[in-house]
Image (cartoon, rainbow, N blue to C red; front, side):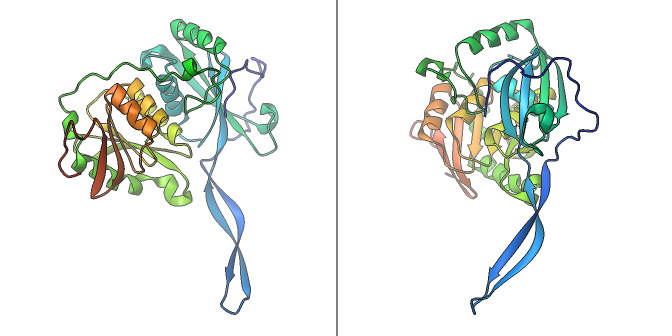
Length: 307
């Protein structure tokens, strides 16, 4: 869900102090039904915890660029990661400040109960000028990097090749399976609500150091990238793991910020493999320990033990 339009709110509008930050999880009333062998149905009222999904407006230097639907947690990481993976800024140093604030549904022009979050980023003038040029040539953007563009040329699928790393062969089946095995126990939101993706950062031995969660797989990756950038670790040896498929936008986001290897629980798409080959990203998929599949670089060109 994206809009590349001028911010409709007045610049001086204040967010009421009483508006709470939307919670990442919500308990809702449900009725559980059970049909018995004799044909009778037993109804039992109760509650169930679900993941929240709220509008998050990303505003760069006072201009609203995108509205994403996401989990209201680790918002600053998400905003910085989005700016990096979408090429709005080139490095953490290009972002001078990030301020997130809740916005009541009425103030945002949304239905009652649909509160939102606005994130204001101050970025370098060079980056903002580039963003304004980009906005002139497209009608919108989303986390997948395709929806809303108005021509094939605007798909932004051409990225420079990643630099060669002497450690990349250590992102092998053993490391990948170790990281994937450790991912689910660290998904705290998903354990309570389900339906929440995770992106994790793994060292070369497969040990996870960070796990970020969101209802959107690309949002989760943006949060991970933002966390790594904010802590000065983006570019260190290691690889990303995702509880999703390896689709092209995830490969593109990784390659843009210099992440050289990615492992996903589900299979990649053909375009995801093609993007990995073009950028030199090491792509693992269908990671179901003790097995994993190496899709890129071409397995025939670089055989891998344990696959």
